[in-house]
Image (cartoon, rainbow over all chains, first blue to last red; front, side):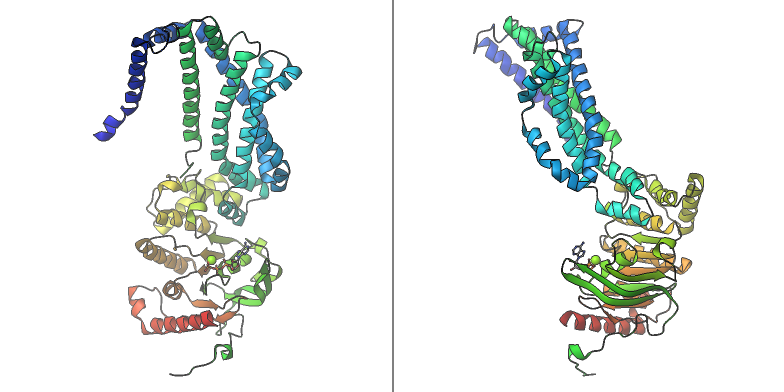
Length: 252
Length: 272
Ligand SMILES: Nc1ncnc2c1ncn2[C@@H]1O[C@H](COP(=O)(O)OP(=O)(O)OP(=O)(O)O)[C@@H](O)[C@H]1O
Ligand SMILES: [Mg+2]
């Protein structure tokens, strides 16, 4: 009974926020030009996503983010495995990885701009750079923390080092790899959206938010913000679902 | 009896094997092992008789796990020699059952696949491997759903799968390191019976580490009692109680006597 009701609990927050927004709108907390009513934003979102400009910007951002995470994964996963399997090697580069992982990726824009120029490549590469470090770190730790007993179990059954690596250590590191991928894609999205706002962009959700704000098309701006939110949320859910079916044993 | 000997005067077991000396299957000679600066075994000799069930018992941290890990090759010896009826470890099929079954099975494979995998590693073809697992299942009369993943099973079921994984390659020696200590009491009793049955049917050499003296004596043909570090054989008595053992065994006079004797030796060793 309660479980069924509890399923709808999140809606309370959603309706609460909308109610609060209307309240703010009607009592004129801020200029209505800056805070349009929710239905205006909803309409802009609907129209924008149904074949409007917002939709094409949305797709551009999706493509950039996916491109960034793909590049990051292709580079960072094999590298993370190699580093994780050679703990001394990892210790040797650990400081560098931690240092750049702690560096705000946005601080790298000027450098990447100089190298790759203004264009898609810079945005994608900076995002890939940030995501790659997160993935690398997680994969390496996943490999290093492979359960000792499982490795011994394979060893005593006569598995070669290569098979232990392939059949046991790799599988053991998968849950942590997915954690890295999920964190990586969130970070990549943040970097892509920021890049779209500021570095000579003509499209993408970040650009949409920014231009709408510049032109005081507030409903459009809110619509773009919600689209970005939905994108981030959706990507996370998609990854969680892939993770659940792929590493079903994670956390068990 | 009121003989009270100074602990130091009590002679240790002087032979590497049991006194009645059946043919040894495993011979350990001149074993030396240290961790950091702690010597665990020094000039240690041991015989494990063929086709017998040997329980290893001793004070905490004396090196029981280390001993079977050294013999089974899980950890390297510093020096010494281990032979299996003249053969080396590489030429011997061994099985090993870990205490921590949660971390010993592969959670990404079904229980069935876990067992099959042991055969695939031995270069058995998949159809034959599956065939052999089915045979083992029938033979043991196992009634659990092996299509499940390990994490969906109870602890006892998981440990049973671990044991089957070790058995499926038909090992010459089976090592078990406190295999039941993470199970609840009911499951432990059940698993003891299963293990005893497997032993009686296969007659393979078994070496079990246990922290439960009653269990150690109940299952064993011989109890290997170890001293504190550095490890020596304190005693290696034969448990002369008929098989199959059951609840009545616990009240058997000989069983009770041997258990008491083992306990006495153990306590002497702990105080030493
Ligand atoms: N990998 C290791 N590195 C350092 N010391 C170790 C290692 N493994 C075991 N030891 C030490 O060696 C000694 C023997 O360990 P072992 O695990 O064999 O004891 P045990 O008899 O099995 O003990 P328990 O009854 O607790 O299972 C202990 O003092 C332990 O701390
Ligand atoms: Mg132990």
